[in-house]
Amino acid sequence: MELNDAFAQLPTPCYVVDEALLIKNLKILKQIQDRTGAHILLAQKAFSMFAMYPLMGEYLAGTTASGLFEAKLGYEEMGKENHVFSTAYLESEFTEIVSICDHIVFNSFNQWQKYKDQALAGNRDCGIRINPGCSTQDHAIYDPCATGSRLGVAARQFRPDLLEGISGLHFHTLCEQNADALELTLAAVEEQFGPFLQQLKWLNFGGGHHITRPDYDIEKLISSITRMQKKYDLRIYLEPGEAVALNTGFLVATVLDIVDNDIEIAILDTSAACHMPDVLEMPYRPEIIGAALPEEKPFTYRLGGPTCLAGDIIGDYSFAQPLKIGDRLVFCDMAHYSMVKNNTFNGMNLPSIAIFTQAKNIRMVRQFGYEDFKNRLS
Ligand SMILES: *Cc1c(COP(=O)(O)O)cnc(C)c1O
Image (cartoon, rainbow, N blue to C red; front, side, top):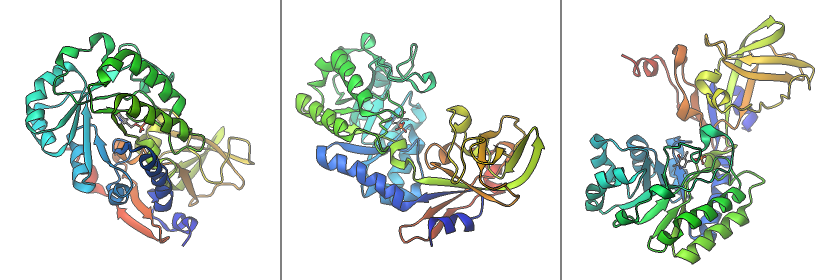
């Protein structure tokens, strides 16, 4: 079948990830690894659809995690390199982290001193996250270099005297950025931390590289990687999340009702607050197949979720035909930062999760129900 047939047949709401589109992204990432020798890891925080981990593992070097649970998922479902960075580790979890993670990155020298013996006894590669203080965007909520940031050690707090046992540095300062932002950041890293790079084995460039976006300057990324490799004799890691799953998934929804209050409002069986929280948090406007900006096409509607939240509004969209109850809408680019951020506010069910396979079939991988809602509560 074609993808459009899948959109018509799936139960809604449903996320569907197109395997062929994911492979397209993975090939771009693999080509960068092949040309540079850098290792590219999936940042699971953005996309933890583990049904796809065996496929992603064919192209990527492994996974990175924000803590024990993601680390376990990567270990169990991909089983390749397994890195972890946490702003602060829990004592109760650290033994297990050491048992499954090959690279452990610390956010402060306090944390490093606290866990150093345990991590080194486990023969793990340890790193410090640095903060080069180089903001390349003005979205403060996504800027780890903003004033007062808790993420990474700033140059003035850096402790060269405590570097024994540290094999790498890590920075993560970009968000949806092109390679020019990486170049600026690397210049800041070299200026502030350059003297220490010589004595280390690896440098992790973090995530936020929007590598699979059509206008991304891949050649500039490659030259940045090779320059740092040659100059300092380092292994380079990248850990994109969003770029792995960018433009690979859809959220299919159904129109449940249409009401009129100065503007026509379509109420859907999907919720911005529960199923696409970044629409409210980022905020951004998701594309819908066949729809346009308000008033561009003859019939404009405000699209809202079924929850009680007045602000559960996805946005205003126009259509060539009037919407009818029962119509389906397909939201684009819904694979990353969607499933991982879902919640069951208002007792909303979670969208099903399906794959549109390379063989052009639907593979329903997960459907949720009342028990999933109840199990998170007590
Ligand atoms: C969020 C995050 C990533 C992934 O970022 P994307 O913007 O999804 O590429 C990678 N590393 C760390 C430490 C992060 O916090």
